[in-house]
Image (cartoon, rainbow over all chains, first blue to last red):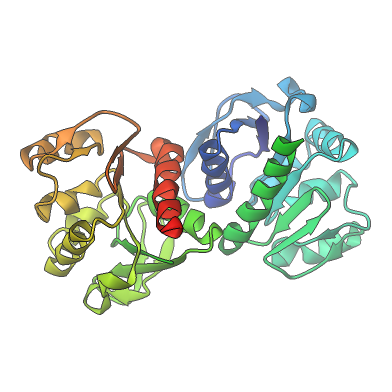
Amino acid sequence: MKALFISADGFEDTELLVPYYRLKEAGVDVVVSSMNRMTITGEHGYQVAVDKTLEEVDPGDYALLVLPGGKAPGSVRKEPKALAIARSFFAGSKPVAAICHGPQILASAGLLKGRHITCYATVGNEVKEAGALYEDKEVVVDGSLVTSRQPSDLPAFLREMMKQVGGMKAK
Amino acid sequence: MKALFISADGFEDTELLVPYYRLKEAGVDVVVSSMNRMTITGEHGYQVAVDKTLEEVDPGDYALLVLPGGKAPGSVRKEPKALAIARSFFAGSKPVAAICHGPQILASAGLLKGRHITCYATVGNEVKEAGALYEDKEVVVDGSLVTSRQPSDLPAFLREMMKQVGGMKAK
């Protein structure tokens, strides 16, 4: 099984690295994608190697999409290919796990209308304007969409993300 | 079930936070202990609240001891109470998971003689002098002692740490 992370410079370090190591622990192949095939640097200075550019990604290769937060989603959401990848996951009802500012990418892709989600508090109004049914909870699961607010929600976020992965394995 | 982390300023952020969130995901209560009841700050700037001073810790309350790396173990190893806590875990054959510079604490406590372990490369000579049988592997398990070298080993470290926790639950 393969999981795709889409991020960029300015990611919230733990929101990328904690799910990244968690999936690798479970034997999932993790691929990090960004605009350029370089390393990306988090708000706290962690560097993560980029495995594929967005253009190189075939979303059909992946069972799970993870969208970490921080400042990165603000640049990722401007990339048409990133939005196309997110739409492909939704079209196939494949799991998407987005935390903090990550749901901004889904808002730009027009994927939040009528969906129950949470996100970082300051992003709440924006996702509501995009049609989301916003809830202030540590994790919200709406079908195959898992969202959380912030790093302190990571335990609940991991738990629900791994349920989605477990469900995929059982299929 | 409760897990005890012992660390201090200068911890390697992911080596503390990744196991911390992983255990919370599994429903384990995590208690962070240090010299003072303040927050401790990692090398990358993450702040973690200290739940108990070393003096307040009764090791009998905990099923697992986690020793993250970074610069923190260099100060923790000078604390007699930290060494006494580690000895209590070994005396009870309770799981101890140490990564990177974390095994320095076990070396100072005189607990490594004849034990198979790994650790951060630059700490290798020191643990050998303390009697350890050092191996350069992503994770080494010797009974209830789990050790790893560095952040990139976290997936294997988590896997073996969680096996120890699972074993405790089954008892």
